[in-house]
Length: 250
Image (tube, rainbow, N blue to C red; front, side, top):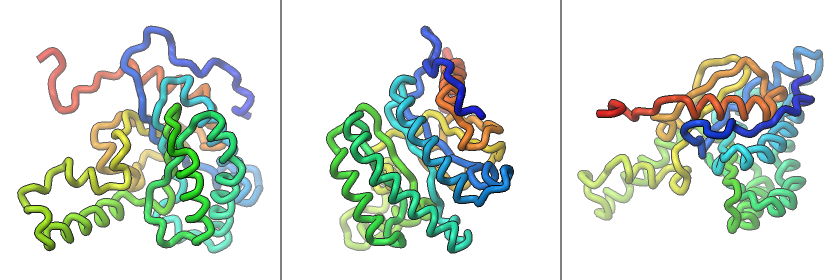
């Protein structure tokens, strides 16, 4: 299994542009398990273990912000057993990783609509956010009950209320103002978005923020996605030409 891959995760010395914010659509947990004849939740538990490894490896690759897509607004359509199992995995991850994240100076945050989540899980989330707020070796963000369209709708409603109250004039509504009302208001836009499992959809993940991000789609299922593969993708990013709509050398 790919977990035994121990090659260096570091990007080659002298590689080009740095990637500081990596966002990952962690896909393939259920398929990984069913391919082995196991329940889907086994794959989700294995995926949570993989998250731990990627978080540990990220700072050595020059990554300062890591954002992962854990549970979308559409994932509620899954079976009750799978949804409850996922929520239990999230809670267990927060409880078990709190000490290690603090010890390694990792700041942990969450984006998404928390209102539908169990109050106990919300309390755990708020607690680890407060506990790690002072750290910045790695800014680790988990998207849970997150959907890009839902996020934009919520931001638009906030701005509409401000306009109705006379606090903001319509002509003052800019892309910067909208960004300030998104869940990611205090995060930089991602440089690189990775999706595992061979799917080539963005699945409503950071549609506003990733407008100019580079994308990588890998066939690897998330439980098999190693730090070494992340390192190779980061190295390839350094060779990409990012024009942001302009012309290089113009």
